[in-house]
Amino acid sequence: MAAPHISGIAALLLERNPQLKPWQVKEILIGSATALDSAFDRNTQGSGMVDVIKAVQGGGKPSMDLTCTVIKEPRRIERVTVALKNTSAQTMHEVKAVLAATAPGIKVVSEARDYATLRVGAEASAAHEIEVGEDAKAGIYEFTLNATYRDDGGKAQSLSCKVPHEIGRAERSHAGDGDDMP
Image 1 (cartoon, helix red, strand yellow):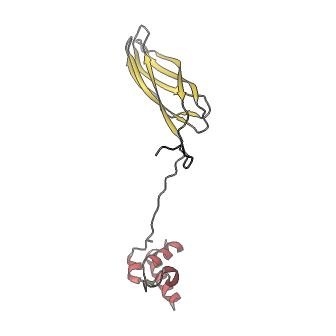
Image 2: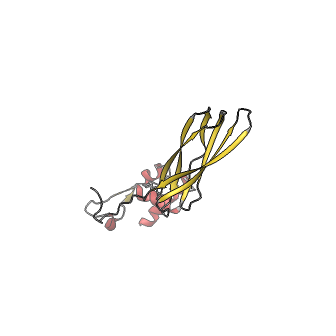
Image 3: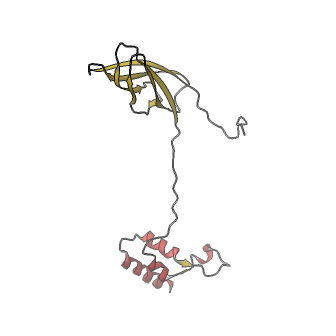
């Protein structure tokens, strides 16, 4: 006799919300049930007796627990701070620079950096971010800094320079190998 009762409650739920999927109806029925006897576990007695009022007044929404998990890919970000000094005879206006890498396993992730206006003899620094992949080997890598600016006459200019940067060995902990610090 349980089947016609549950079918009737399922029909009431679908009447209230026809978009419910079968698994959602099942979740509502299970979520609105009250245990019959505490001496028995769920494997013995099931979810218990369905509370029709609770099921129907639940708004036709299944009661579910939601677990969110963030999956991160291993990566390491390093900052490369590059200083630009104006050694020319005129002011460099609206200086912007972008770092470029060509080495395998190394990727520049920062956008162009603003170095503002550099008067004659002035210096400015900006941090550029690089992503070091797991396959990148330790060593000194050469990056290229490409800068653009306007001269005193308003004409667009560009220049580039090489930037050496040392990539160290990635620090990784190996549980159980005896080398880990407490």
